[in-house]
Length: 344
Image 1 (cartoon, rainbow, N blue to C red):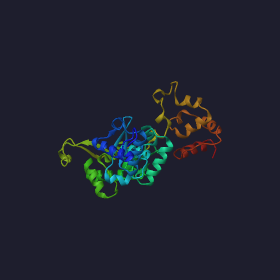
Image 2: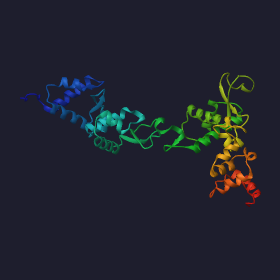
Image 3: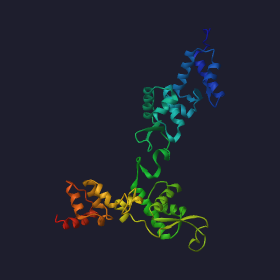
Image 4: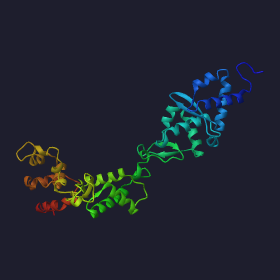
């Protein structure tokens, strides 16, 4: 005869009842429903039944809306999960829900309410059994995220084709830019799809590049002044391209990497619009008020002020230096001034 609060069969009977309840609730057996249906069974017996099913891999445990949910595991999954503790199953299923985005340990802790040592132990065991894997994220390089072993990380995690081992692959980008530019110049006009097909067929990379990836490369070329965007008219030189289609062509005039305006302070001066020969801000007043170091650096780089500065000012500025930073582009000009001052 069964004792009070314990039905005949004990844990074995509780196991069968749990499985029956899970089958009757294929979308998940809520903890509250399970407690209500098995209120005639002692807590110790129910806990033992749950642990027995988890140990055999026949039961899956989920956290949903702050409550535990139970599901019967498929037969093919029973072997895979056999021997896992309830904490390990909870961590596994939390990682499973993150899909190919992965999940950080702090998020696992928040979702499972487990302590960090329990999570660390569970992750170690799951990794040993090749059920999960750690992946480095390009967004947070010092942080590892975990996902199921058989999944491929999303492009948001790995950075996509432009990243190699979580580092931005500058050399690969350069090769792609060169290949795209070469095709555009050869064709005269080309659409995004034409360029993508040509690069893929060239075999320069085994990476699966999307149209969005090629668009990023072409945007770089546009910003570099190498190519120009144009809307096809569908006639004349655009006859091979449907009307109103965005296409690319070689730039008529390339942007210079450097010029006189990028080599002198005036070219980047924030108060250039206030500077004048007789104003409060002028090349002459700048030189008179500046200390020796500032004068010398200015003289070594600025060509616009030579007519406003005397040779004596140059000499005074250089005398104030024990170490002078000389840009190679300005060295000949400085040596010429020094020769006039009998320094050479």
